[in-house]
Length: 181
Image (cartoon, rainbow, N blue to C red):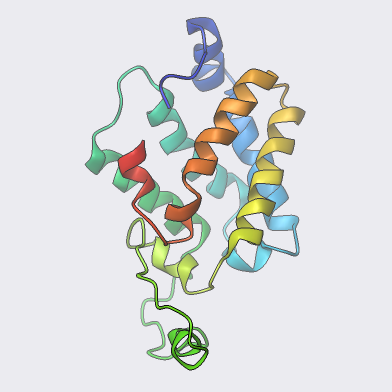
């Protein structure tokens, strides 16, 4: 991600300004996602500001001049998934509505796929079985949030391309996006 075409003044404004542009995009993005009936069921009840701050942390780490270590990035992503999706019950039920979703693969004759969560907190999202339509909705909101914030088209395209590379990882069906970053 550090190979985005940002000059130092743009990067400074994007990450370190009084109201960082990336944080403004993150707030608008989180707000749009929580208001969208197609995907709002995935999110917990924490505030948009809490979601956005947790999302901004890995963005800032990825765009900063020194890339974070794999462990640091893993911790930041785990913090985001906790802030956005974890249900915060210390003693989760042993049986939820989606715990037996794998039976549909068996009964329906579908090929079983390996579920690969990005981090521990990502498992909360995966239990709700997000699919490509949900990811597409998130991409719509990301694009709209960047347009609203006045992000230049060339940079928007680069950010959307980067986000698209994480599709399989976010949907827990491929190698970790953390490795791709």
